Each structure stands twice: as C-alpha cells, then as structure tokens.
Image (cartoon, rainbow, N blue to C red; front, side, top):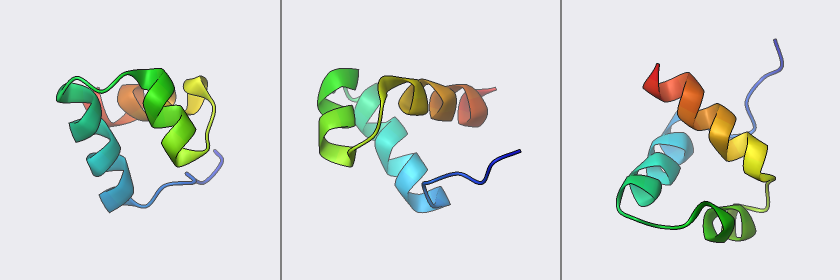
Amino acid sequence: MQRSKFSEEQGVAILREQEAGAKTADLCRRQGVFRHAILALTHFWCS
C-alpha cells in the first residue's frame, strides 16, 4: 500500500475541519490534493 501524503497530525486536522463543516472542495484547494485523497483519508481514519 502507498504511504500517505499526510502525517497523522495533518490527517486529524483535515478530518476535524471537515467535521466542523468545511467543504471538501475548500479543503482540497487548501491542502493541494484531489477530492479522492480526502475521501480516502476519511475512509481510512473513520473505519
């Protein structure tokens, strides 16, 4: 499996922003990643 682009702290921060109501498109723009990367991160950490 490919190593994550995010450190654990970055991943948690992104997920907290998303839970707080930030739109996925805005998170992608700020982090410089594709939407699927955020969705995969959500799936990985929230399963």
